[in-house]
Image (cartoon, rainbow, N blue to C red):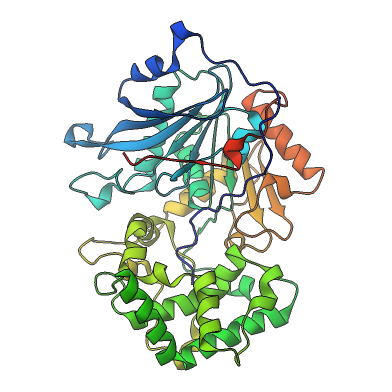
Length: 456
């Protein structure tokens, strides 16, 4: 099963700056001064960027536990791509750490707005010290977003939109479930909805995905061949790990477990990040070990299933094992070749000194809200993305909301990939929520040459 795959893929367009930029704020209303006056907000620095924009690195003071704000706090990282106070504002979260590069999301491009990018709590350095992991849940994270929006609304008073892809899309929906009136609309890309963790649809999806059964058969065959060549594959994996100083004893357990997790992940990761166009690149069982190893490394990445690869994603695995649920893909087809079973359980990917207990019902509550009360929600999924096997679904009580499936798309599905008239409908809906017309400026160099954030 693939548990690392909630990491967002950024898919952007390539054009140079066009159109007339919105004018910068007058000197007597300098935006930096306004931001510095927002309670709890710290302006860490400003980076040069495109004409018509300003880019700020910020932190915001959050309580460790919103129910007990007196019990200490932490600084949550965010960036602000300022456009103009008269434009709408998009709040974007990956659901993980703050992206190292500053780029505009598709909704930000479509409304030509400001963009706040927010790091999820417990992803370092936005983590309380010491960390009480029971403070990491969907309500606490939603309240983080609520407080950021409420604080910045005194500067950015036009409409707000929330967005995110994968776990970021999930996070945006959870925020709306608890604070439905904070924003005018939410665009959630490739966001799975694991309502019942014991009733997964991923096996059925993977058994039928794509247009060619031979592609799925080739994936199964190369998995088996990799395990049949276990000693050769382990030797290559160990040589790589030793050269990079990567270990296995703190979280993964040992290198044999790491190898099996890479092999088990391959079909899910192949359809999530690659797709039908790469079927011809799947090595045959007669291929060299070097070719087979390279295929798994490109598709899954051996570095991920090491202590160093897993550790940054501990908050995700903790959430998966306590509230979100996780994608179950049967390992039965490879059972005769496996040394370890049920490796994908989140408990196996979180340090043992962090207590975990799965709380049944958190996702059912969110699902019921979407179906019975949700409004101004837009779900964009990829036809061949395994995560689309369990999407959010609209119900009889959902209002002014839309669900789209991008033909042939993987985990990088975008509104831009929809056929007409769906694309036009989605874009018009988003602009209606944001209360803007079609913007003059839609694509800038920021969308093709992201700025790298300086370490804070």
